[in-house]
Image 1 (tube, helix red, strand yellow):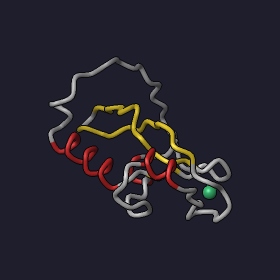
Image 2 (cartoon, protein in one colour; image 1 turned 135 degrees about the horizontal axis):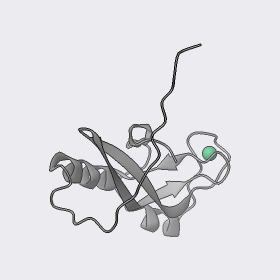
Image 3 (cartoon, helix red, strand yellow; image 1 turned 180 degrees about the horizontal axis):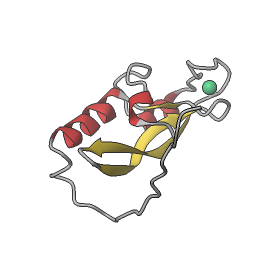
Image 4 (spheres, helix red, strand yellow; image 1 turned 45 degrees about the vertical axis):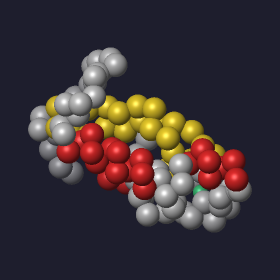
Length: 106
Ligand SMILES: [Zn+2]
């Protein structure tokens, strides 16, 4: 799973990912060999010192290289949720995540 800032919002046009896939095959922009498949992904955003996980995000994923593409309207919706500090979204669950210290460099 890639970090949210790795999502490329400019790769797919404004049509929802599922509709795009139903209409025609989309070749991966990253590796130029995989045919993108519609799926749902999750990602996490920092909100101050807390992490917020957003799941069930519509996306197109390359089965060859694993690159994930999110359509512009989905990115806008994510930005809107994030801009409100996710206050408008009711949490559907809680996760406990391990925190690891990197230690000394070298
Ligand atoms: Zn690819």
